[in-house]
Length: 359
Ligand SMILES: C[S@@+](CC[C@H](N)C(=O)[O-])C[C@H]1O[C@@H](n2cnc3c(N)ncnc32)[C@H](O)[C@@H]1O
Image 1 (cartoon, rainbow, N blue to C red):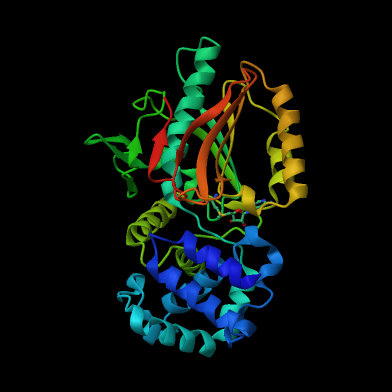
Image 2 (spheres, rainbow, N blue to C red):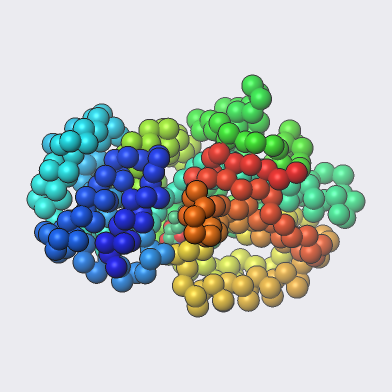
């Protein structure tokens, strides 16, 4: 099973990350021959396919490189100033992994996939504008609702600041022009909302089973290790999001989504749109937590009123039929209560960029 999981993860990294593809495919070859990688990765499959053992392993190796413990392998890692040489990569990686095998194994086993991807704030920002304006329009309010943003699976909390991002669109900047985080969202189409309207977030909070603190050296290293080492654009984006986080710290609560949400949704304040947001989390959530989360949301939705509305905004993967060019696509879905509005706002890449808005 692990061989197939590593091969699947290797395929899913292309075309963006030839390095991660080569790493995971080489490990799969080694496993198929019962080579020495077997003792490093055995048991990683116990979290199930959704826990993506290949990505946890690749991040553990990246962490080894970023923390300066594998200088020869670092020569292949662009995020450490190196350049991939496919002919000599695997012998260098194999040697470094075996030399640090306990640490790699421990890290890959202990961690969940913590890809806290700031690119996902672009569809989030567009979706929040649609939600705030649509909820206002439905009750005849002249200005969009201010937002109370609640994020499940927030990881390091980097995506809790969609109002602090500078989006580069049509040669102009939408959002916070002073932000260290500038995103070219590569949008096709536009959201059905006025993007020049102020996005007012009056409260923001997040929870995660394994929160990572971007205001510590180890937290930053941990979050950085999940960026594919040859995706320098994403690397720059993450470093900018970490700088933004340092100017405006937010503590992500260590909690499972349902219990946390039950507390946060106990009251729906008036004159504010409460938005529950999650991106690329659902595949990691247990069946029990999913069912409980749905119940809690349905119970809160039944209490939503015109003055105290509730929204669910999610950016999650959907498996495509066999033969499709990509195994997954990522949909931005919005539901609003009490109006009952529900629909897909658009579809994009796993990291939020590029993105296509539906009309
Ligand atoms: C791939 S990361 C995505 C992080 C962030 N949402 C983003 O898009 O950048 C998935 C996160 O979900 C968290 N997670 C998984 N199951 C959870 C649960 N039941 N409750 C809270 N967080 C959960 C993991 O710990 C991990 O940080």
